[in-house]
Image (cartoon, rainbow, N blue to C red):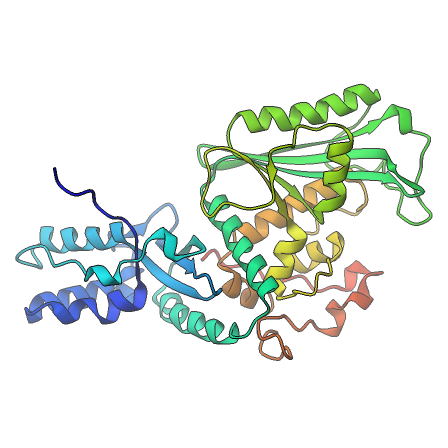
Length: 398
């Protein structure tokens, strides 16, 4: 029996600078080098380019120390060998790179996809990765941890499967055991396309409890559908059914902004979350229930490791996904939490995404070399006037 093929990854630098060195025939060596040139890899005629993505998909692997590597998959390397031979550019299949260059999934904390559409992007990618790896030297362990989680989420979201439900509760400001609202925003995938639905409900039993002193009262300002006023028992059962039905269909990601309070409320109504894991998978699982926190994802993106959580409305404004006039409505907050998750999870890898959103604002950050140094108009002092916060730079799709 033939040995089972080992699949893994090769460093981009090894493939570009080392592989051709072992090929004795000058013409074949030139053919390989030409194929691997950034402008060739990203041309529409390159067989590795994905027309649906309008670019070539490589991978970013994050090592256990938080540093990143740009990667080819072993399947891509095999394809290059066969394509060059089929085109008559090599007399026989080129030898594979030495096995010492092959890296397996276990070599990395996470592996997530990245799309390159132009040669200039690919040429700059390796330089940017090396620069950011140098910045990470001596970075706080807690920041390394949430940066890894950010890439876990990107990897899972790229699979375009599972159910993703953002959940938010509002409680009475004078007694946090009294639930006044529930909102959710749910994303599923149909033929690779996202399908989003949501809802907002109020337990009739607690209708007499209004906020407005310490927290805004926006219970009647749901902007993405109709608010439903229902009996308390029905209110609880519908939330339980929402979670159990989604979990029965495959992996379920429950998305929160600052998850501790909402998880306590889910437990209060006996929601079926006993299997909820706060440890995220490295790749898309086939089942299970996982808690995601956009507050932690945002902290990873902007390089904050001090444990402070950014307010939902400020985070959304700085990410460019502020889609409501009325925060502190559970339905609106759930909608915006999912929008923020999608914006970060569908964007480029963490360091490239940070630079795209806040160009040139990392270099000047003191101490923490991967932290964004916000401008005065983006600071916490602007919280009373969200309209003064500049929107983030639009993300490119790489």
